[in-house]
Length: 224
Length: 127
Image 1: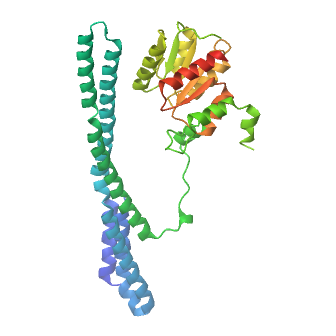
Image 2 (image 1 turned 180 degrees about the vertical axis):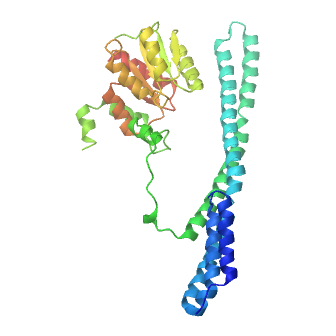
Image 3 (image 1 turned 120 degrees about the vertical axis):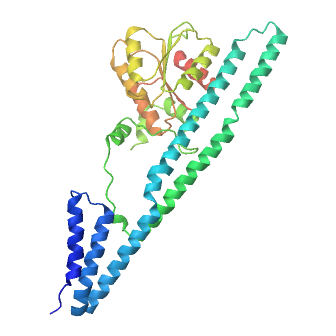
């Protein structure tokens, strides 16, 4: 009668012993490694008993190996250690640059508005100088545009890899877990927080004026 | 109620630049007594200490939103008559309707211009 070889059993035991030393801290890579060891160990035994099962095991082993390759292609460590933090820093820099530019422009405008206009020559010199400051402040747009391009590039990098991985897993849509509503989601729903809308998505000031001018009965009809 | 340029106005927004913009626009319109708060909680405290002639508030702030501030103001017998204008990027129909039901006097969608702000303030005080 066919038996699992001593060497095969030994490989499984070695793996389990090694895992035991780590106190049960099992990663996805460990699980895949165990599956590879197990399928390899069973291969010798089952090839003698049932060739069809052997083919299945070979296919499983190939799938596991391919999945490992896909996981490596995700470059998850690079994403979490470098690309996502870098994108966050770029966005922080964009916020800072736009804030600095806005402050510079507003300070210039406030100085022009509060300036003494009785001395025309002095006023003209002040306005010219402040206009130059406003033009200079507007250069932020070029730099922030470049920073936004870097963030978009990072999003594309993540999108490409995650999409390829999901496609490789072939998970049917109906198998996807429902998203649980977080406390933040509840707050947004209850306090009607949508944030800014894209052009054409929200209502215009004219629409708002119409709604504000409408009788409550007319508004209620919109929800019937 | 007549528009009085001497009345104190409270501007509520968590974005300092927006407070500065509204403050400057109000000054251009002739208002002199302008105070500000960074969210609904701070605004409500200030309103309990001082009688404001007009509140101009953003919607999306933490911890207390402008919508919650509006409802609390309307529920407080001492503050309920205070004119309240919402100035916000929240531009969904349901936001406008919720604000109207809560008793807002006018609603301005960001981005807005000086003429819109002037027109809405005048409309509130001409009603």
